[in-house]
Image 1 (cartoon, helix red, strand yellow):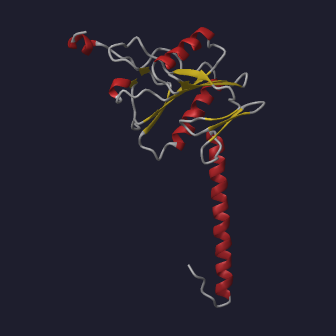
Image 2 (tube, helix red, strand yellow):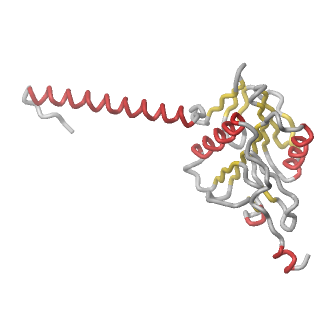
Image 3 (cartoon, one colour):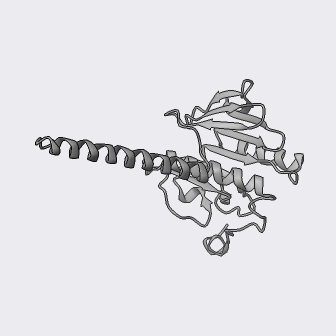
Length: 219
């Protein structure tokens, strides 16, 4: 391919497909992406994205896929129109997640799995929230291989633990904190604020009692 032909290639930022087919699938995509971003926020060299087109091969805009969530170690945070691997130190996403919806076809998911296998993904997780079914694949001897005991599995790359209960999937960060929805996180922050306010008021009452006794409280 000539240089002029290469420069004329276009790598679209959109494939014309919706991010999700329904509210449950969308909620899970956002849930995973936001919690992974929270956990890796202190690390400037971990990039997390949702529904971002990944082009693994320069000069092949036809080779592309948009994982529901992807995680790349060794690449800086920041906005991108797409993940063009040759512009990213040729580092492939190490971990990808897919959330199933009723509209997903088995042939489509098999094709995605083969794409991830071919282009270097280290871990691939596929979750069906309607059936509460989780599948995991890790690279062994050069190929993505199914995880046998996924119900209480810890991701080697991410350090997060998957706990598959009877009704839903729960995920835990390496520090033991559970993945939270935005509403759960807001409620937890409000509870923390109220505890701090209660402690402050208690300290103020104690200080007032000490001053009434002629004792100046220590700061």
